[in-house]
Image (cartoon, rainbow, N blue to C red; front, side, top):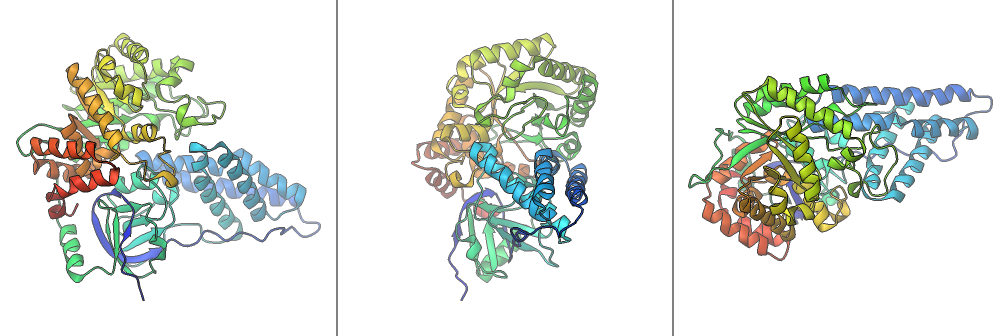
Length: 561
């Protein structure tokens, strides 16, 4: 008999959906241990098969990345690079030649060795194990003539249930087929969560018991509440389907019910995303990630190339504001030409603005390009901000560098607790601040934002994180500087209410989230935002904070959020 017990996890992509459960197929089977080539076999030829398979997998992933944009493209490019990793390929070829292992077994053992090295490093590097295993399975499938790992193909929409999803696989999800995702592992800022939000797919992660729900069971997924209900009532199903048929749009005017203005902006990760973001009604761009210009390269792009790329985004938002973030390399975005030596804990290493200390030319070229693009598009208001700022000195140096390039509106990202606690002194120099809630949560809670084992801690609803947001806003108010949020928390309609109540002046998010966030704010007056913000910041836990706020926002249920 099918259990009707509700499966509870962490809601990471709002919305409700219902459909039959389809489990992600098992990974490619492990080739038998010790399986070797027959005597006299051409070992060099067998070793070359490994290289050809790696090149084919890389090309497939590169092609998929070329057809994608933003975060999806970046993740696919990163996985493609891993498929062609010379250390993995060379190790597998060495095992073929010296141990006479068949190519697929050699790849399997070489991947195991790489995974062991990454696990030993811990932190972000340990999280890359999942990507290595994804590449391993693709290579083995190619070498053995099996179907490559992928999302199940069905003739009707379904709910995908899995232990976890590799970024390259998550990037291929079709919202018309996969109506919701439930995973047993993962965290609120994992790639699964980020990509699900970007594609508008309701998702729940860290849901213990999800794998116990039998295939074919009808499952109602609430991506905001973090629940998955087997065999829901006919009434509940009808309500979800009725809400799914409703289409919300954003009119380009973010405000609370009593008219308090809140800028609702879009996050943009690639020029190819800019026009769609502008068409969504976004009041501007609160986070223009510039990493796209540097990924999948052996050297930094020149000034002319950067100028043209940045100009495409500024052109799409003529008459509006675009906040350009300078290169945020390091940690989960390593660039070989900037990071020669691996770091034991990249999240605490040379990343963001710190890269400029070793490579000031990279920042100088980027500021030159941003200034030229801004001059070519005077109708767009161009602001610039630096990631991973931790001290007053760093702020002063960055603001001065921007001023030298004719960029007067220079701001900072608040991603580490020191920046939140020193918001007043920092904003005595910077013109604005933008809170990156993903990293601020990670550093506040000492919880790797990509590690499922600490997913409960890696939650922007944590009261400690909310108090640091409040401290940042207080520092901004003392200096009459605006403070925005551009992390994933801004896309959560309930949390958006709390952020506004804490003093945040703008929210930047995936364009898909704009209508929902706008609708909830428009139904809530500023006084209620402040009351609910206080309840959340004073709550004993993230779960209590979320529950208290949702209980005070009946509009969420009315809108199916």
